[in-house]
Length: 129
Ligand code: FE
Image 1 (tube, protein in one colour):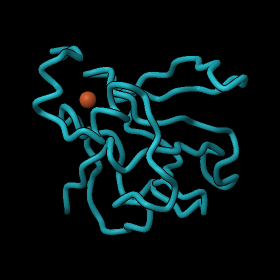
Image 2 (cartoon, rainbow, N blue to C red; image 1 turned 45 degrees about the vertical axis):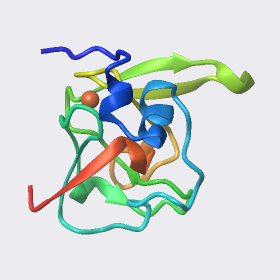
Image 3 (tube, protein in one colour; image 1 turned 90 degrees about the vertical axis):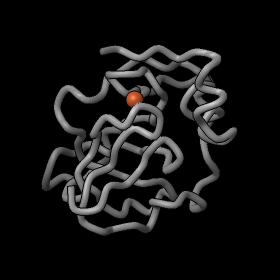
C-alpha cells in the first residue's frame, strides 16, 4: 500500500527527518549516523520501513553521506531534479515517496558505476536483515 506524505508525518518523524524526507532537505555532510557505518544488515526507509539498500552495496565514497552502488530493485523511484541550477536525479522511496537523496554516475567502476548518495536521516539500519 502506498503511504502518502501528510501533516500526520510531522507527528511520526523527528523535525530533522521531516526536513529531509518530506521537505527534501539535505543533512550536513560527515554528520550522519550511517556515513561511516559498515555493519552487515539492511537499510530501510526512515519513514515507512521499506527495505531499500543492503550493506553489501554500501561503500565509502568520501563524500560525507552514506553511499551505495545500487538499491534493492523496485524499492526506489527516480525523479529529475533541476534545483540549484543543475540536473540531478533525485531518489525517493517507491512506497511512501520520502526523499532519500540523489544518484550520480561516478560510483565504483567495477560494479554498477553508480553512487546513491543518501541522507542517513532518511534511513534506519536493521542489523542482520
Ligand atoms: Fe518510505
